[in-house]
Image (cartoon, rainbow, N blue to C red; front, side, top):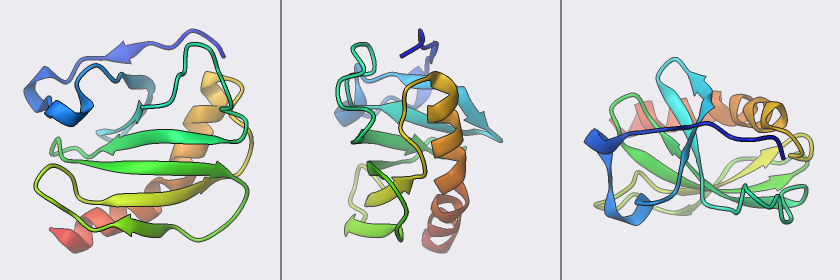
Amino acid sequence: MNELTVASFSDYDISIYHGYPVISATACNGWYFGALSDSETGADLDAGGDGYVVAPDGSRADLLWQIGFGDLTQVLPPDTERWGVYAVWFPKPITTVEDLVFGFRFVLPDLQKIHLDLA
């Protein structure tokens, strides 16, 4: 995978995400994707992975992503540290940062709707 640039969100640092980078290239109107899977080695990123989304207000939700097409599904409900855990589908394998940006922006409208509905 291409080299990733990470952003710092120290104002919004939530302990369960400490040390897991937010990928600055995914920025979209204040929304970001953070990597929980090993983005440095690219291991199995062409099949799926774990990540999280950061909303403009700094709140976060975990993402379990797979390659293909399917419906966004809630895996776990919101709790005190995140607004839920969701299974999402990226439409193509993640082999570059551009693929990651594309996949994140593909699922972002659904995530934005969930976040708004929970507000």
